[in-house]
Amino acid sequence: MNQLDNNTTSLRLNDVHKRFGTEQHPVEVLRGVSFDVSDGEALVITGPSGSGKSTLLHLIGTLDTPTSGVIEINGENPILLSEPNLARFRNKVIGFVFQAHYLLPQYSVLENVLIPTLADKKNGDSEQRARTLLEKVGLSHRIDHRPAELSGGEQQRVATARALINQPNILLCDEPTGNLDRKTADSVADLFFELHQEEHNVLIVVTHSLDLASRFKRRFELQEGKCVEA
Image (tube, rainbow, N blue to C red; front, side, top):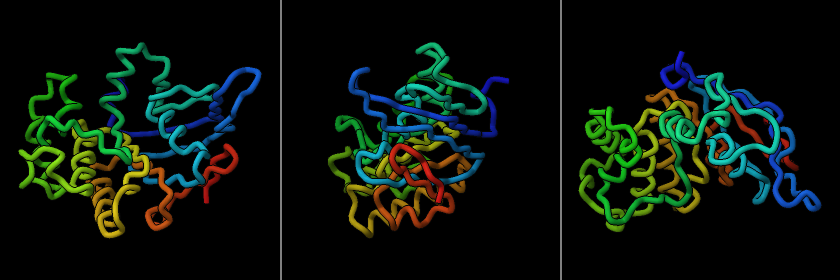
C-alpha cells in the first residue's frame, strides 16, 4: 500500500542521535531518543533552550537527517526516498506551524493558505477546503486581507490553516504561542486542540510554556540529549 494513502498514522523514533560540529569537536545534541506515537495522539516536548527541541522537530519533519538511528512514519523511513519523493511525502504527510508565521506579505490570507497545494494540481477542491479552514479559525471575514493587516494571533491562525490544508497525518508546532500574549496564546492553543480532534492527526508541540504543556496528556522533556516521558 502507498504510505501516502494510508489513513492510519504511526510515528516511531528508534535510538535517534544528532551530532553537529566536527569529528574532532562534536556536539551531540540528541543522544538516543526513542518513542512511539499512534494515530490521533497529541504530545508536547519541553526543555531548556539549546536542549535540542527544535532539532528533534526538524528531524521528525524530515527537514534534517539523524546522525544515526531511524525515524519511521507510517512504517516508512522517508529519508531513504529520493529528494523529489521526499518533498512530496513531506508536503502531503507533515504540516508545520512555527513561532514565526512565514506568511508571504504580497499574498492574501486565502492565497497564503493555498500555497502548499500548488505542488499538486490534482487537488481540485483546495480552495473550498481553505475557505472552510479559515472559517474554522475565525478568519472568513479576513480572507482577502494581507498579513500586515492582521494581528499576531490572526497571523498564527492563518499559519495553522495553511499547515492543515493538505490534511497532513502529522502536525508539528515549534513554539506556536511564543510570540503571543497570554490571552491570544490560550485562544490559539484552544484552536490547536479543537482542530486536532476534528482532523484526528498526530499533534507534536515544542514549547517553553508550562501552561501550554500542562494541557497535554503525553509530556516529554529533553534532558541532556535524552527524551524522558513524564
